Image: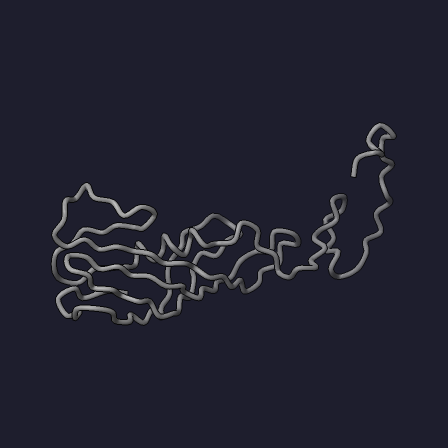
Length: 159
């Protein structure tokens, strides 16, 4: 996942991304992700602007029932590479890299974009019922034999 600055022509071109990234996320989240997509590379005077959306997939643990499943999400990419500019210059919300010539390794920047796009709550399916709070049984596989706990009458009015 590299971009050769010396071989990029003026104007717009495409950069095909297809590979695996180590995410290093916490337990229960995807540790590796397959990343695919085509990014647009705009060579504008002394800078390159790389934009697009990547399709990402990885193995994760359901936040409700703890089952491992394939998680799919999109990652927006906006990276700016400055070639001959003041190193203190920034580009708003875009990731900014400084390099004049040669190959730029985009792995770290793409990893950051993928992590930023990671879902807050990953569930195996929309109607996942999760685990029983008393016995820990998977409620997707059927109801458990736990008895319903009496609710303190002072709490009954709350939803």
